[in-house]
Length: 213
Image (cartoon, rainbow, N blue to C red; front, side):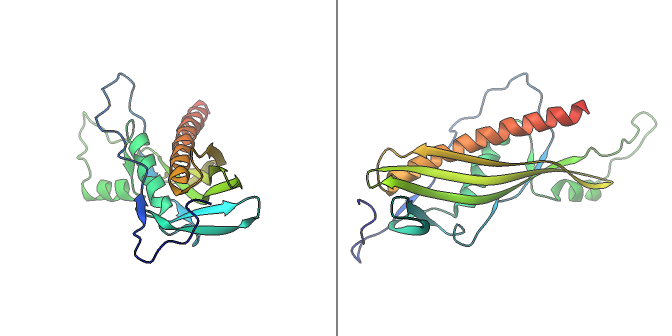
């Protein structure tokens, strides 16, 4: 199978990412910005916490993760996914690390006046992701797809503590154009974009439901 054979010792691995992303600023719209969102790099297992491009032979031994010897991610997949998600969600809301807003508020508290009474701080949303699967799955030597599975947990942090708003698993599978590492990378990039779109829609749904209560 092309791409799974052992390379020559002098060969240099190809390095992949999800592409350059958006190359220009999105035009201004009349849609109001959404509340800030706390978000950190997704957590993952030791097997997925590396730059190795992984695949499974579903027709032989689907339980074994195999590495391509001539293909690497530019950074661990969880970091690439986090970077991609920040870029998309950041178009309509501020994306901050957990605790950033609280630290800023303590460092520079606004002065209260008779005309501008101080209101209690708005609760903050926190999105936590756990990456569970990120590999190229071969159903046959010439047929494969990129499989991504992660679990998302959305909480709300306020002065009274933190509460769970919703939790959901996202799974997507995108066909690979070629049965090699390059095709797997393209499929996993498409799977990532699909899951990010699904997460964005899910966040909007949960926020609407929370406001309606």
